[in-house]
Amino acid sequence: MADPERRWCFADQLGPHFLDSGDQPVLLVESRAVLRRRRFHRQKAHLVLSALRHRAAELGEQALFVRADTYREALARVHGPLTVCGPTSRAADGFVRGLDGVTVLPSRGFVTGHDRFEEWAAGRGDRPLLMESFYRVARRLTGTLMEEDDDGGSGRDGGDRADRGDRDGGRPAGGRWNLDRENREPPPADGGLALPAPYRPREDDIDAEVRADLDAAERRGKLSFVGRDGPRRFPATRAEARRALRDFVRHRLPSFGPYEDAMLTGDPVMSHSMLSAAMNLGLLDPMECVRAAETAWRDGEVPLRSAEGYIRQIVGWRDYMWHTYWHFGPAYTRRNALRARRRPPEWFAELDADAVQANCLSNVLRSVRDVGWTHHIPRLMVLGNYGLQRGWHPAALSDWFHRCFVDGYAWVMATNVIGMSQYADGGRITTKPYAAGGSYINRMSDFCHDCVYRPTARSGDDACPYTAGYWWFLARNKERLAGNWRLAPQLRNLARIDDLNEIVARERHRGRP
Ligand SMILES: Cc1cc2nc3c(=O)[nH]c(=O)nc-3n(C[C@H](O)[C@H](O)[C@H](O)COP(=O)(O)OP(=O)(O)OC[C@H]3O[C@@H](n4cnc5c(N)ncnc54)[C@H](O)[C@@H]3O)c2cc1C
Image (cartoon, rainbow, N blue to C red; front, side, top):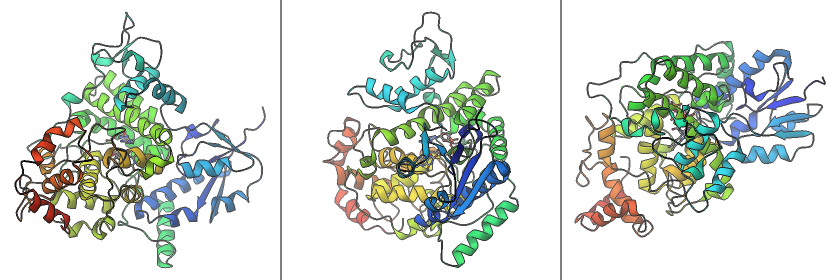
């Protein structure tokens, strides 16, 4: 058999599932220009370089590892045809498709292919492309958490037959597709979850070299970063990623379901996996995470509510975000349905957690500053919610999330930030904006206990910036949101607030919260 063509693997295609065989020749490129394009979090730059260099070291002579200023410069040093799996950003995809001698293959690293998503989307007709509906199709396609069903029905809670991804029957394990109702618990009243600390990789010589290179580039003014440097927290090799996955399944997956939406001051990780960066670097195949969770449930080690809750994040949300990035097209990332035009302030851009008094925001910003990561609810309900209430420009916020998080990539930003968090698409993927006052944060966290602001206060010196900000958001957008039936009661309440003018005036000029 002829040697397989050399596979060019981008720095987010580092696992074995991006190769066709164990001995396929590989091209890896470290481009300096990529780090100059944006002011990334220092630990993100470290993680990406470390993972790339570890992969090159692991592959040894099987890989041609080129360090150059730009990809074009690197490619000029490579002879012979190349293949590449579809890159994860529109810019990189356009670039590789314009190159001679490079064959672009279908993308890998996700659960479902674009064709299945498009087939499902076409079948939706005029109905909204709801994640929950796509999730059921993906569950059937992959046979995840499915049980035999003699009559070929779609499960006790019915399910939309038009959404069926295949002709096979089968019912969701436990009879329901979604166990959210049993989850979404506030954090335990007595403090923490008492779980062992999450897996942490040990740095090695490659990390030391990366740190020295980044320090030198920063000193010479070639690169500039946000956030603090610190010991690497996230896997940079497949072996580390697999260890982190095993650790998660054993220690934290059992309590993932009930506490997936909760937040605690002293425990930013809680039951979350911290595996998004490993998956987005391509070190883990998402299906191996899904199978590990399913096996743990089948073996009786994990309750279904946790296994299903976690699996939905990957088979459902992650794949859905990936496909909608391509499906909605480039104009989607420029959407600004609420005409939000303010620039995020300096303290936010610089991750200046100490400048902020609001306990929730200060804690979450600290986590971003110190590790470049926080779990889903702080991203959506603390950071995103604040930007939405304040009318910050969705594209600026999207750029901020992209740069400041170790797992941030272009494809994740579109529907997560522009759509879900900022409602800038006018409601194509959510039925209402994710705006909430301090009461939500108080219910789902312990942040408000010793905060200078009162979550129930919307006016006065101790008015919670989230509670007051919520009413300002509604007041500012009441015409644009008038047709939204889910917000109708709140919009009616707006007319009954006698101090609304005072709230609006105060919030419009609020400095650091
Ligand atoms: C405003 C905003 C910005 C976000 N930015 C990113 C980002 O830059 N990169 C990123 O991977 N995720 C992003 N997410 C999704 C989600 O918050 C993170 O995937 C998750 O918090 C990562 O932590 P974890 O690995 O512990 O996740 P867990 O809670 O353990 O969840 C399991 C896995 O599901 C996947 N997942 C869950 N939800 C999503 C989602 N909405 N989109 C994509 N994958 C999902 C992740 O791979 C994650 O590892 C964002 C969400 C919001 C609301």
